[in-house]
Length: 366
Ligand code: ADP
Image 1: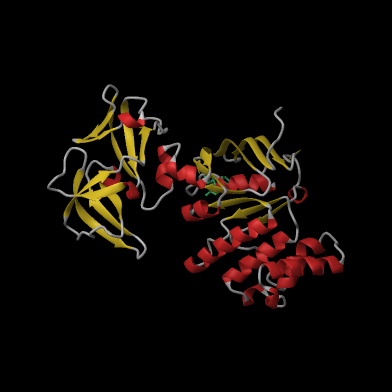
Image 2: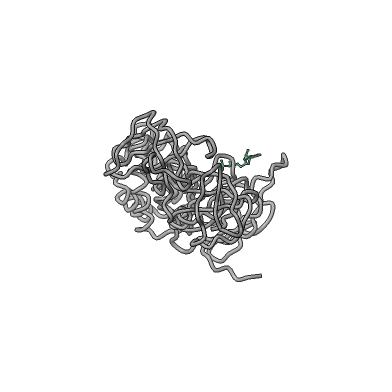
């Protein structure tokens, strides 16, 4: 057996529920001491099941889980030294904030002075000291979330596990808590595994992102690598807003030229390895507007269908029958002219930022 090198390590972990559903199919990843790992993917891809298996709330049907070098497969949840924070906070309604946070220590029969010290340290860290005597129903969503965090913190676990902890908060508070949680993790230095379906949370919080799809891992990498070098077409589509533009076509093995419906891109400088059926991916920021009058085979001309002004950025969507979803999105730069709906414009991909995927396997070629 290979030695365990990560603080938390999953090796070929699988879960088949009694009804026969293969929810998690042999996944492996690790989290270093103090690392913030985000599990992201569409609903039903197996994120929560994975987290619950780490916590011990769900039995695993294959593989091994190690925490701090110890195989925990057969350990009871309370003996795994992990603390889980849920989406619905799971606070005790009849207990005060103080009692809720103290709870994990009280049931361990920790002495009163220690409980008091730990609760106060946690509540100061979370800026909720003034609410110690309130009941959960007298708190806002954000405050309840902090109490749930406090209850996890006092346990001083090896690993924190978060299951979509921000999904019940409104947009502004989500953004605020995202920053707070990340700062908290830096201060505590505790290893964290965080489940979300929200790509912004994944990109901004994770030291490392694990992208899951249908019970398997598509890619494990830093947010930057996930975005700049997606390993599969699925990963490319899942992260990034507006969604990456995808155009199905062929690469001529001799000329190293991608072509689709009269549109072509020279890939020779990029060292495209193979010919055949491919999907070309271009993120909206790597499409530039051009003049229709001078448009050639290296540009696509289309009609503007929608202009989205977000304040900080403007996105333009143009119709293109041979692109995925029937349109292309491009990000306008501050000094670009903003076209009107119905205008015909040309778009040209920049030479950097082109992605090529095998059409059959979806695997990255470039
Ligand atoms: P995610 O968290 O990514 O939304 P889940 O881990 O909750 O996904 O679920 C993964 C798959 O396992 C889904 O197809 C889901 O229907 C199934 N599943 C989850 N929990 C159970 C269960 N207790 N019994 C049977 N199937 C389940």
